[in-house]
Figure 1: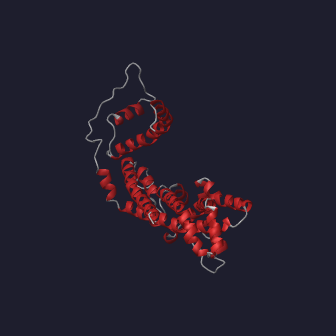
Figure 2: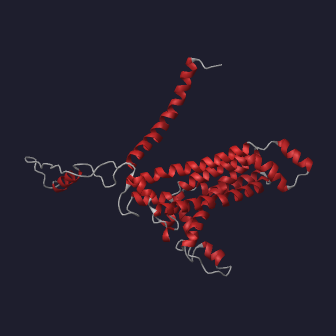
Figure 3: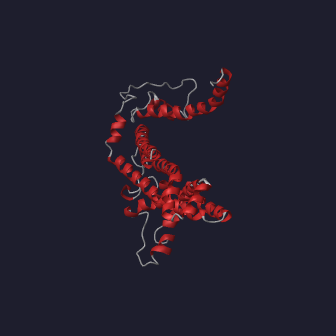
Length: 329
């Protein structure tokens, strides 16, 4: 049965606050971002230089009887340059370096977090509820902590020869201490390890909730037939947890491409030696502020941010297609 007109009006007014805020906080910034990406980086509004000069000269010498006049200077600068900023970004080698680093960072994080979270969830599932709850809370602490605090603690863990990793693991095994934050070979592994430390507990919680939701009759069938451990993983665990695996992958992909605070607290805005830890958002920050490019290139940064969107959308499309193919089996 169709909804009556009064019911449709009620549904509309119930949904209006959500979609109204969504339109305001998503579409409006997107519109201004596209507008900014089409502008000339060297453009300055007319009269700005003249007004700033008059204000500077007249702060302590303003004459109320004879106020200064503002002379309008002609400018040849144009405001909009079309797709020139996008073309400039696509010809930037450093952008592709940041894209490569980010892809490696996302792939490495997924390859370590998913198996580790799955193994931890299986181990915790065998414990009592009280022990399980306490251990899950301990695993969730890194994901609940502020990124800046977590990165500071992680920096102390990797800090040169005196870092905890060198003192309690590398040197006792007879190896030379590793300068994790200054060696290009170890900067990216350090960022991946930070991501693993932060998100493994949360992914473990996802999988643990999925294990709790498996119907009881499936466990009873497994016990009656005497199914082995690996066959349980293939026939029981993976089919029931596959949707959570894809959700965790989507979460880690979005977080990886939007990651900034962790890399910034460990490496600053530079991206490390030889840009070994330069991520996309870090490079956007460099372009927007004088940390890397030496000028405030907000149009270039906006164009770069908009170019990240189709890349992320394409990756997520492939992931969702994987889910569709799995559901057809």
